[in-house]
Image (cartoon, rainbow, N blue to C red):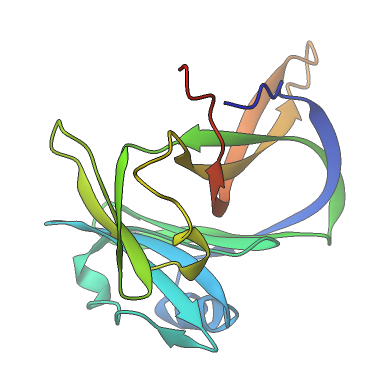
Length: 183
C-alpha cells in the first residue's frame, strides 16, 4: 500500500451546531451530491445522494443512532445523546484557519462484487456490506486493492501548555487504494 505519512496542513473550517429537527432538515438539504453512513439500532447503511435523490430514504429520526452526510467540503454529523439527536455541520474552505491531518482508514472487505450501481464488499470472517458508490466499481477481487475511508482530523491546542489534540474528525470520501501484491 502507498506509504503516506500523516502531515499537518492548514485549512479554513467553520463549525455550527445542529440540534433541532428544522436545523437537521435544513443541513441535510445542503447536500445535493454526497455520501452518507447511517447507524440505526438494527443495522448500518451506506447511502448515496445524487442530484438530491437518496439511494435509500432515511428512516424516521427516532430510529437514527448516528448519521454522517458528507462531501469533499463539508459534513453533517448527528448522534443520539440522552434520546435526542444533536450534532454539528462542518464546512471547510470557509471560516477560520485551523491545523488538520488527512488520513485513510482501511475498511474491512477483501472480496468485491459489482452489484447495480455499487459493490458488495465481503471478507471470509463474515464482513458483508453494500457500498452504493459508482466510483468504487473499478475495484476487483483479483487485486489486493482496498477501500479506504478518507477522514480529515482537526487539531486544537490546550490554552495552558499549548498541547495539540484532535478536537474533531469528519468523513471526506471513500477511495480505492493500490496495494503491493506482496502484502
